[in-house]
Length: 347
Ligand SMILES: NC(=O)c1ccc[n+]([C@@H]2O[C@H](COP(=O)([O-])OP(=O)(O)OC[C@H]3O[C@@H](n4cnc5c(N)ncnc54)[C@H](O)[C@@H]3O)[C@@H](O)[C@H]2O)c1
Image: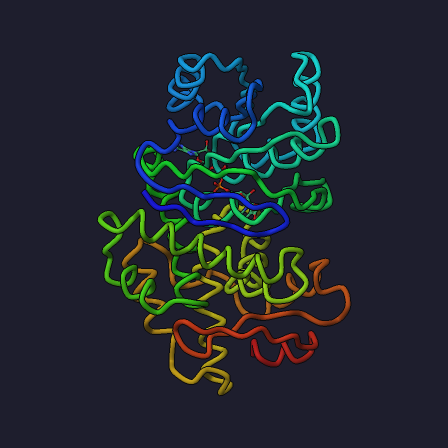
């Protein structure tokens, strides 16, 4: 079992290992005292993991209830958010009680926002059940729901007070979702840690899973500690993501986020090398790491198509765009450039 300590606007522990979800009852009592718990989860995760969480709370005489919603990105909506808030009110939860997000990034983002809003803020614990949520979305405090106008447009920063990454829960996760999470793990290696990158490139995942997750969480923690509200260094976490957003958009969201990040990392590292930004040719090693982890390496769209999708993105409304480029494996830099320059680079 490993513990990573986060010291952002809230201090909290991220506890990583097999069966750590079963620490929930003990930790709730220790951190919050005599409170009630509402577990928020989607129907798929509920079918595998809700019973044991409820049993753990019941055995410890903690009053609890569960809000279960249909799985999928479409549930990350204002409608489901307000259904959850109404549920909490109907069941007489108070602001001293605890919301537990049991699920992937969709559950974490939705629950984190509800926890910030209900009675102006109740306690929040994250139990991520996808690899992506363990290494990325459960830590760092970004919460949101999607609007019709775009993804993640309504949200707040709200750090959890505890994160329990139970690696046993990954045993039920379908392989394609595991691969999506590995794209983020490879990203962490490229931006901050050659040693982590080597482990992942060589396929030593299963036997090092706990350490890999802990290392990713520690890298995210370090970046978030320096730039919690995403005005500078936090952008490093977007390596591969600028183009990934365009790829996802071009595909009508048929290409998964992880696959799009994989393609985005390959394209941006090739651009960085060809334009003399990188000190070494990182692209070949990134491709090896992606192939080893069942991720795609080639993109079905032309760079010009990706440019137009990026140009229409709200984030580039100022006529500039931030791209994250590798200098070498383990070190990346943020370049804020004019859209015209970005267009040139993509040629
Ligand atoms: N807040 C952040 O910092 C942040 C960062 C990255 C991504 N995100 C968000 O995260 C979301 C994507 O996260 P995700 O990929 O975890 O999606 P998700 O929550 O939809 O989970 C993917 C699928 O896996 C299923 N699932 C989850 N855990 C399982 C398990 N242990 N066993 C079996 N099935 C399981 C879910 O039911 C779902 O169908 C996006 O909405 C994205 O915007 C947020």
